[in-house]
Image (cartoon, rainbow, N blue to C red; front, side, top):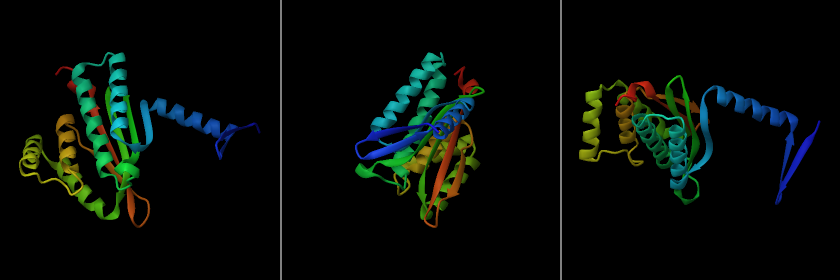
Length: 202
């Protein structure tokens, strides 16, 4: 079996044919699912800005309507800020860590984020998600106003406000899942959908 060995300082990476084939298969599957950006790592302000710029450029290249671009941009900013502020896996310089995916399939854009959440933060976050998903558009509007007026934000800096705003702007339910990692933490996965056809005439 052919092997490519890459040396970088004291680290060695062995790239076998099977490894390259596995990466290629993952890439093909991402393309089939409409993924345009996949990132795993820390989320600083600079990285958030880079992703929003990339997404805007891609939508302009595909002649997406401005109203749709604004919706997608808004959701990206909210979800990335949410991950950066509320991840329970904080790296150096107080920067959050997680997974970010953006894609489009069948006229629907989707933004997916995943980050580690401590066991004690899981239930309050899930209750907030259930509350947001069960609210009517008018109730979401009132909830948003109340959060702004009273400053009743979460102890981690306003995750509830961000979730409410995303639900208001997209008009869709927030799809989420908690995958238990160990006795102390979960992976929190959030998927937000933006129906381009719904907003194309705004």
